[in-house]
Image 1 (cartoon, rainbow, N blue to C red):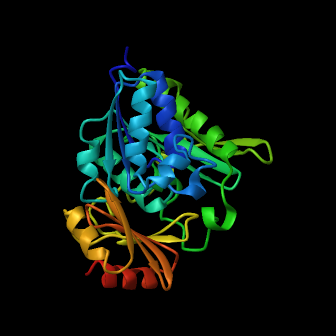
Image 2 (image 1 turned 180 degrees about the vertical axis):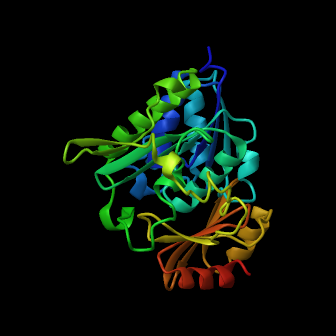
Length: 324
């Protein structure tokens, strides 16, 4: 009954997020809020289990597709999808009434933001990450356990670690990591967080290895800027980016300084002067042919520029097509 009454925020609905969402809905969580900024792409299908080629053809946002399919799996679960980029301005609203936060993201900027808001609100969260054939996961209980910044004080420098672009990611690694992450979530939601060990678990499905690093004494020795000294560098907007290279996509997301509320029909009419346009209630998609770019614009003013991983080039295209 505790699981049926539980409320969960899922941050990201890609590879990790689709498996987590499917598992939790089938387990009967009462409420699942899904927040994702992206749309379904053909390159993702080998590891994002809720999506198919029909969703790609319709250019639908991931959170909307996920909600539609999950509601057919278990109609008793309330599913609340949001097409949005989680940032310091909206994250408090997303977490305000949930019991648990799950990490289904693909970047450390959002993870450090989740860590900050979890510490601020006291809501537990379960971190996970996956690339290549390996991944890791750990549970964080604010005020009780080590937090993410106790283990990783700052995000890795650009180019310092493997990414989906440089190493790819295989589906079995996703399923192994999310099996551990979802099991941890079910323990917490069923009131048995005492069964969750204070450890970082690292798996590699290609090598067939599993390692567990105890974190039980880490917080006692830590001078963590977040959970010991109370800094909220990401939650306060001190560390924010308006441009993000999307993992494994040859794409860049550009976000406006202030969220917009675009009239998509009017935008589509304007963009037809520049190239072929398709649209649905959630986004407008423009195809440019010289050079070849696909520009997808969301109602909040965000745009994903496909065809480059150069942030400067993407910003230039955004300014030319959408405006400053």
